Length: 226
Image 1 (tube, rainbow, N blue to C red):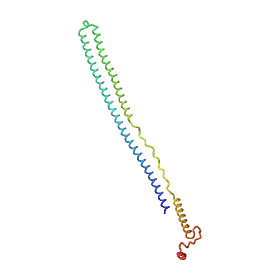
Image 2 (image 1 turned 180 degrees about the vertical axis):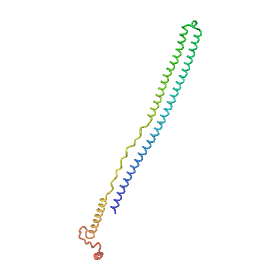
Image 3 (image 1 turned 180 degrees about the horizontal axis):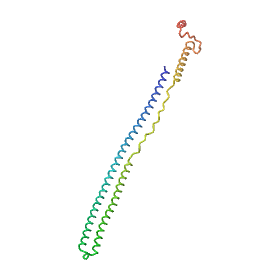
Image 4 (image 1 turned 30 degrees about the vertical axis):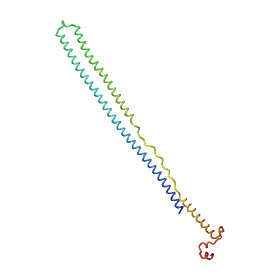
């Protein structure tokens, strides 16, 4: 019974140690998956913020570009109106010269009038050209600002999360084998046999080995000995 009890106790201890190792391995896997899920969730939110920032940047750029284009259209309309006014003024001047007749017209005045009309037209065209270059610069500045903002958004993105390495698998301990139980039972049997022999020697002559085994069980013999 002692050998069987020791065998069962050793087996129970081994099972408990193996179960504890399996529980730690399971908990490590669960924590690994949990951490990865949290990182993926955070990364997805940051990506959504990044995409929203890109849309806002594009909308802001579109508004700025529309404002530049609107100012350019207004300038072109004003230039056309100024051109019409210059044309009307030139026609009026030429009409005045025609009404005076060739004898009353100073040739230099007519030339100066045509030159003035040309300068006005050239000034309008020059202003339009300068304004156009200004629009190009303004548009370039808008693009640079938008790109700088987008780069900042991108730099704020975290790295794509990756799953942590797998935890080391638990090493299961080997419990006591049946052979050890058999050996324990054999050892117990030998101990019992040795105890029986010692008892026999005690009753039949210590150490002589010549005692009668029947003396151990035969009460009549014990009575005769008395």
